[in-house]
Image 1 (cartoon, rainbow, N blue to C red):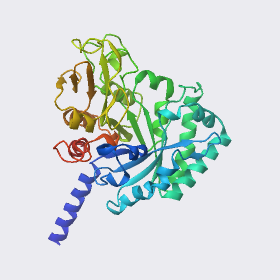
Image 2: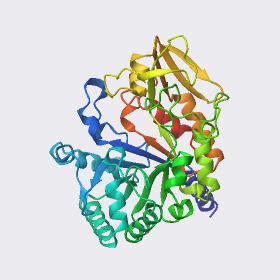
Image 3: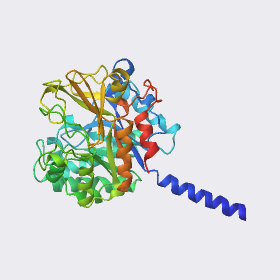
Length: 384
């Protein structure tokens, strides 16, 4: 009897510890299979034990409300979908979720579908059929953003209606509904009825990043944890992780549903004057493209640590994030130190976990000397 009681006590303690670990929601960006050399990333490169949920990004939305495959060759010709699903053989608890949308999809189609009862039902049925066909554990909607980019004012209410009509049949089948939402306060005020969003989602992935980038003409870190003393206007003081998360909480979102958005990448600038690299210093465009991400103004952590480790490193004590500089090239990104601080912040707010964009720009090969997936490993180490 004593041994049985000890065993029950141990089992109970283990279950509590397991339950408190939190979500680690990882976006798998399907197009990364086409990257060159050390940047090539496939479904078989995923470590299924570092994520609780993997979100397949992305499928699109047809004007008739149907799920639209954006790259059939990647999905089926390269067998990536089956490779992704095979990860459950290594981790039976892993949840794999279909994600629809993204920045390139825009907003106009989503606005039109959300406004029409008939098109909403067509979308729900198409999502359910697609999820069932491939064996997904849920659906993630990344509409960027209601009421913006071609959307209309009615999107705010229609978004809630759409979420409710998706959630009921998904939950009935034991499936998850999540959404990626903005972490910028001005954007949130336009787009979301936050109590309604919270009520109609199982997970809320708050994108508290991309606050600054080469779309502006001055230096700014893409995801500062806190405001800087150089932030002069009221809006500038809100463009940080803490302000974004606290806004969602203050407006009534359930903290246990919120996953804090964390980046395995950064954004960079070409400085107008290499001798002036402070925040808000003038720039004339994005930083040079890295060999793997191949996009001006965007850099992967794997590129930073493998190729630019000799650049001058600066830690910003106010914003709690790093940047590096070489001549006129300025790159702001997240490293293990800044990720730890963001995870500890999420813990302090009682959040449900973390969302990671994205798997392919962590040092997944372990080239830089801290083992594979140093960013993702740090998240798992410090979360709760």
